[in-house]
Length: 485
Image (cartoon, one colour):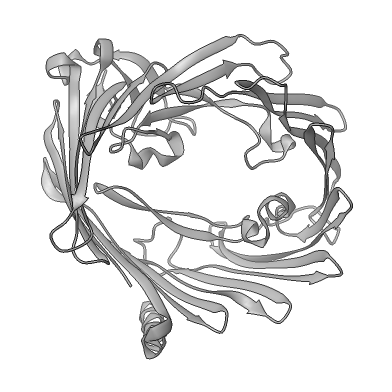
């Protein structure tokens, strides 16, 4: 199986080089060496080759990590006459795969769309493995259409063995329902692959009907707000009816209602709303506010300043400073999900990026600065609540850009946030206001991250990094390069 996948990848690469004038691609490799104890921390190498021909993009990509070849996928998308089509097939060749599935076939996803008399009709078809102890393979499809009549936009979709995709297609087009294979370079200590695979197949049970879900959406303006009405039926009957008002203008520049939603089920009614404060530019400071309110609670419990960051240019260098007063912040409802999935605004954890002085949410945890430690006999990580740093950029000797950056992290007031290394009951446990005097240096210093990057020519760059903490000394060094063509 592995040999066939490698040969397939080589064939695609060979075909691509046959028409190099229409060839583009990227090769990234990153190596982290742990210093205490000394050894290989992590390794990723990512190769992506795209061949553009006749309005089509043919793509092949592979990922290698310290365990071996971990992921291979082939993708094709483009137009054929009035049809827009997309297809992807993905394999996990070995046990070192990015996800812990059994080695072998992962997913085969397909999408097609055509515009007929002003109505966009689309179909989705998935084959996917990974169900049950035997890694069973399942399949499912969806058929939908979206059209406009005057100021009203309407969409309808029916699925079999698939979750509803209509909301994503309605907001983002056909690409909203397909896999997005992207790679995010956080810092040079980790080159972490991130992707979104379309809605997973549902293996139905106890359903005799031909469909899994029937969904409808209507969008229409009323006065100063955009209204969405959405209804869903499953094979067991009526699920919900939701009304969602977005971008409600209150006539106040700095304060508005971002979203107000009402959801009805057979036995319940719930209301979710989220407010938004726009502070504007405050002398290059960026404030992060939480407005304390909850679903079905029509009062504001207060406005909390969670964090404050500063970014300014000094003599050709960028200076950063940041202070987190409360890691737990509101994630506003409604960015991607219909009201029934929201349940209203909810709280999430935010941390400092290892570089750049920004904040990252919990789901990008690998991009943030932390210190491995043990607290009260429990292994976990400490997160600082204050930082400052500087980033300087200039032209390198060989073309491209040379940059140098150092960020320093502190436990303000001798406290930091502690997260357990393992999940407890499905979620991580956070302990606030942990005294970390034993883990810090002068002024509560917890650690620093240093990074160098240099462009070698117009399409090659190399990078190196170093992480030092008060508790563990030099934790790791990193090396990497990126080649594009």
